[in-house]
Image (spheres, rainbow, N blue to C red):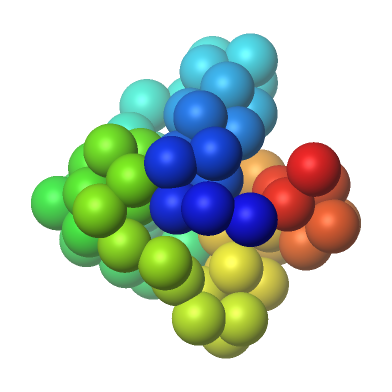
Length: 66
């Protein structure tokens, strides 16, 4: 999956749950700036970060990569 496509999916999941970037960043243990860059498609996160983001959103890692 391209970073741009992942960015759209991550933002969509976050917004559909009514979670701010700051809140999701705190739950996932990343900085808000890093999360913002993920949502802009500037980073391709490692599996360890995908797991943390998925847990924070209460979805499976596979759901982040659809």
